Length: 185
Image 1 (cartoon, one colour):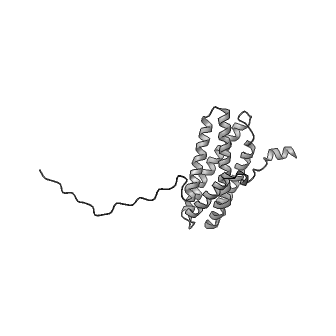
Image 2 (cartoon, helix red, strand yellow):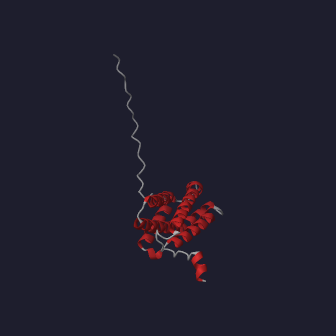
Image 3 (cartoon, helix red, strand yellow):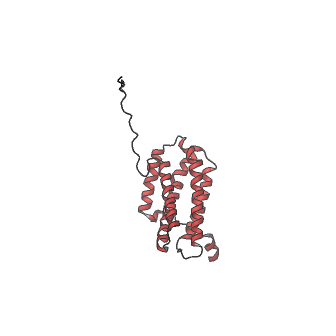
């Protein structure tokens, strides 16, 4: 019976990359985590049958989207616009944010029993999915290959996000819905 000779490796074991924080350590990881969190909230909303639970979920969705939009507009988009010399992606994203804010303003203060509540939440969900798809498939790949310091940008986004969540009075006031503004005129 022949014995097999075993070669022993002289290589040192490969070092593992340091684990990333749950929120992500770079800007794109943080923003993707926000996208996943909101998607999960919409999924919970769709499954819920309780008006109270739906109301709580919508309030959380609106807060998450408002904070997310504000940190993108204040920090992320200006950096991306400069780094990519972008004249298309960021302006389009800002227009989409304005529409999302309008929908949020129309939803706030309404309850699941309101005739337009479910429709507005559904449109908000679909619009967010569209916006996320464009950001992640078009903008993020370009940002990833840019010279932006994504770690520093992620730190700044995270700090501002924490600040806004700790002090909601720092959030930008939602616009007055156009339909209400016209009715009040």
